[in-house]
Length: 442
Ligand SMILES: [Zn+2]
Image 1 (cartoon, rainbow, N blue to C red):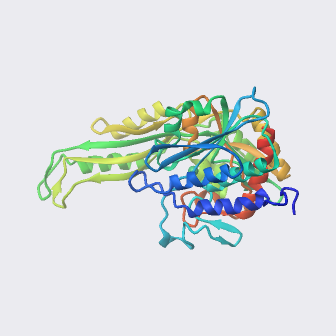
Image 2: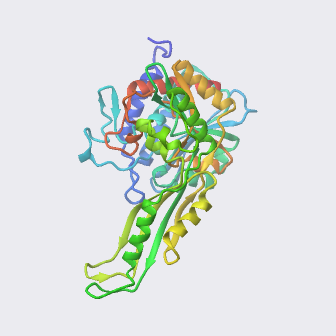
Image 3: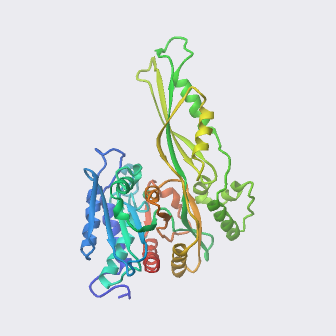
């Protein structure tokens, strides 16, 4: 029996495996369409049940049939202090079973990993938090300040039925919350056997999804035709797709690169950060996207018959802007596509950036170091977006901190939305220990 466990209950480091596996077995695929998205309500009810078992009351808030969000407040020892929000989404992106080594919703334990869609994004964290809270309730631990738990729907499709809906319709649930932790941060990147960087997310890029509209003269595909919407659109898409936006090194990325070049012994040329980034191996893609605005064409639509020239054509471009660069990016894009193509924004959410300092950052760093003496916590910018976008609208300072110690050879960033998504069991257990420490001292 470890000191973590009492006689009747499993240690949280054991229980987290079962909790995570149960959650992985609930298919919560978010297709981006209410009619075909499934499982969020079942997953939220599961969490509610696990909380109720240990006496934590939670409330389920449905934004649309089946789109369930769960919120609970755990009272802290000092009611005078501001609350901490701990949030995790319950939905996952789709997975095609044919492409996987195991069934993506089997929650299989194999080779020291727990496999399944959501294993790192982010049912791992959902389960860790649940394991810590259940352990506290059973053993009478009270956090130093109020903790608000939010298990959300719809993060993978922009959070309109999840965090954005919650913050717009149930703002009061987050009263007093000034800081938050959630995905994507706190994971390790091995420098060597004795040192690991832990990337804590203090910034994330803005989401600037847009649709290009080209118009032309419809006509017969056999004729000479000089006003073809498909041609005009294709040219604009190609220009955007091939364009490289200028490098801009923000405070967060500078702090990250300085730390990384120090620990790896890489020469960092501030004029040319890409050379240093290229040496980062599996996280080079992740970090490389945070030194410039990006724009990737993702969808094309035009036409309805092989021999008919359509009058219109559209393309979707997934753009991500650096903090403070969204307007500039819009001007850059207008210049690229020219005057004849219309730009329509379909999602626009600002980038976030906070500083890597203060008591909360201290508590995260101390908890990591206590569990891994070789830990070097560093701030970084996420190239994607999370529910933090919604919570930051309430003035909450958001961090990505879902601690995981990872094997040196694991290509972690490729597992996000990837095939054979899986989480190392010992990493999951490490996360529970770090969170337990952090949440007791934050
Ligand atoms: Zn996620």
